[in-house]
Image (cartoon, rainbow, N blue to C red; front, top):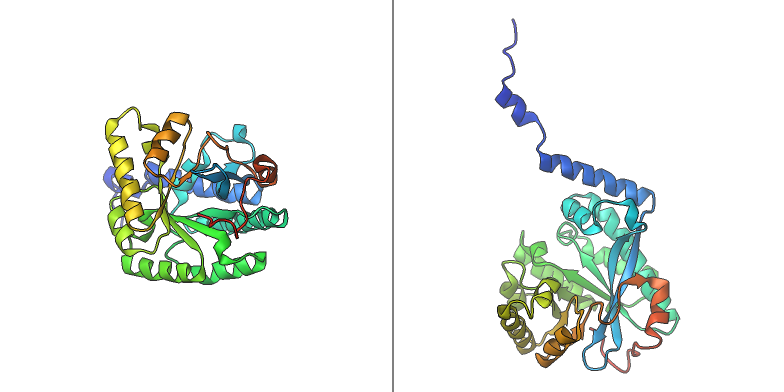
Length: 285
């Protein structure tokens, strides 16, 4: 018996959407880039607002050759953030970041290293064990690591997220709420999760003197964080005017081109030239 013809509608439903095609291509490109060693980590120092000394550094993923890629690393990561392929990349990045921090410490430079945690990585039940293993292998204490977590990372199961963060904090790892104010649950995070501080995104900092409301939002965010016993990092601080306003508001830490650009791990000690304080002299963010 002849089969009925496939209708255009049915055929259309079976065709992959442009978004699916884009994600599949992004996953392929990420796998190829990892296999070909085309990624590198650069590190951007975070400085104390009072004296400008670097106290930590955030690990940022970069292409080894920017000219070779049309898309930014951030665009690629956004496309694959909830795909299992992100695990391999984050394991690689964590190992690289801890190796860098170990090298700085051996050179007499005590800097905590900050690593971003994806929405896919955060819910994994074995996260604490894997972090403990990698820290042990690096010879670094848990206090040498800071994890930056976005609000979306915990939204699938808030109670489980709270428990997991409590365990990480108990290990001595510092936890920071990244891109504060860009999600829909920031206040819930601050009231219930054991974060050590929050990061005000550059989108707000850049608009401080273009949109007066941003000044109010940033000032109130800093006040609220301090009332909760949290510290605040302002990202993408690029001008003295931004720095001065943020300092007036009591912001604790600055990150941005006004102080340092992101750089390879081996260049960081020379760039800081002894600016980081030893652990006995100050607490790291």
